[in-house]
Amino acid sequence: MTQSDQTSELLNIKEAAALLKVSEASLRRWTNAGRLACLRLGARRERRFRRGDLMSFMEDRDVAPAKALAGSRPAEVLLEGIAIEYGNHICTLYENDLGRLKWSVPFIHDGLRNGDGCFLIATQAVRDEILGRIGKVWDGVPRAIDEGQLTVSDGIADGDAMCRFVEHALVMATGAGTRSFRLLGDMTWCLQLGMSYDELLAYEMRYNHEIGHRFPLVSVCQYDVREFSGPAVLNALKCHEDTFNYSLSRFLAS
Image 1 (cartoon, rainbow, N blue to C red):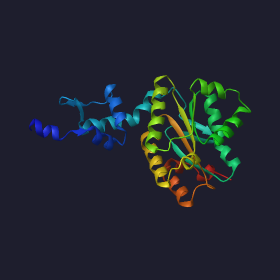
Image 2: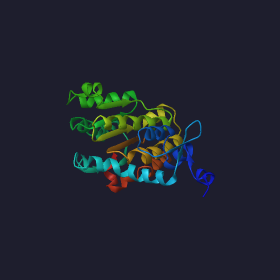
Image 3: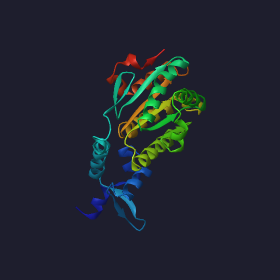
């Protein structure tokens, strides 16, 4: 095989990112850190990737977080009597204001008290409601935010940018020694920022593939059925297949 033939079999960074379903920025970061092999070609030293190297990296990436943290944390999060394994991305539905708090308050509260890195992505009003309830029984919320244990966000209208934000925060926190995470997204933030249902669906699918199953993380996306259409709720359930590993009735709050 000639050198020209070998070069033609290599993927450029755009093609490699599409194959792994990640951002080009992630590929640059992984190659710079020596985690992912690549070749540098031409005067501009452009990255080229062997398909076999990419597939091996993807397999290693899927199992590495669990192996790295084995024995250093519980295997699951216990919430409302349900043991939810790390790496699960589930959906809950509610139809009134009290239902919004049923999962979100104990989920974040227990995570903070147990030393998990926590994310709360919601509109300002919903965040104030959830953190206000937690603050009535625990005074550590301001400290958790100041120290970076709790990350709060209004969300980002661009789903790709939102995934990159969460991924970067998880990578940085893992590097700093955090061993387990929880993320609660009250999905009305998407509506407030003007996301279409199609854009929301694309975001949930990307999050599920690139983040939800990759990190030692339990992700809960809760949907207010008063705000979302029936088809949107149905698509939300389809994007959260892990939900069906449990009794679905436990994730419905009236």
